[in-house]
Length: 322
Image (cartoon, rainbow, N blue to C red; front, side, top):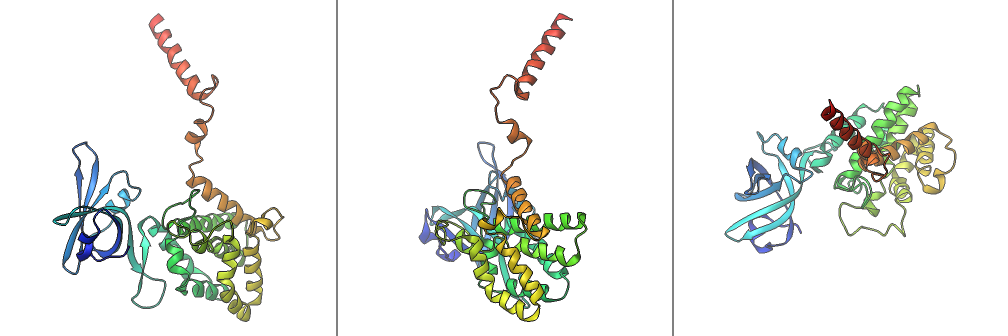
């Protein structure tokens, strides 16, 4: 619910969304010993405090913000207190940064996706001049696509399930594709097509996953991969008019992301790279690391956790005997 700071008193015990400047940040400690930030927001001369607890996934990121020039932010949170002493329990922040468009307009970027946004911007700036660069610029100048893309989740219950998660995931996939393309000695054209495909491979999630529940569309009825092609169709049509070779290849890459096609052998190695990078990014965010691996089968007597305990007991007995 989008409200103004002046009207927050009318929304006690409700979730709200408002725009303001973040002008202050002070680290505090609760009576129970837990750290939190007390944040101060100002809009049109009206001020309100925000509380951000140490357990929030954005706690460390807010602590790193440079407030010497107070940034304009979008605040999502819950209104606590009473009309005489309001405070906002902050759940998320989006920060205004210069948009990819020419001019003074700005996008509101979820704080968890800021680094990914700068990487995306770098990819678009460095892309070789030609049909692909024109196509990618047109896509990210499209106001029906980009604002939603920057805020969309990577999934609902799987990987990157936070606002801005789609951007973070897509940039991770692009980074992996770039590195692997260089290692394999692929041409600059193939590498840039792979990066473009990685950045766009899940674009359809803006209509199927969205930034918050409820989903915009039922995933049982609509495929995000097919929706990607639908959303990009006008831009692919323009690309075909100026560079048919690139348009044909780009469309093939997007079709290879459809589940029915994933079981087939890709006719382009960059399609395989995008698929593999997609899986790796998702697995990494789902914490498929060694600690997660070792949490499996802990009750086995041969499990390393059990063996370590046995070894410690044996060493203690040995030391006592000595």
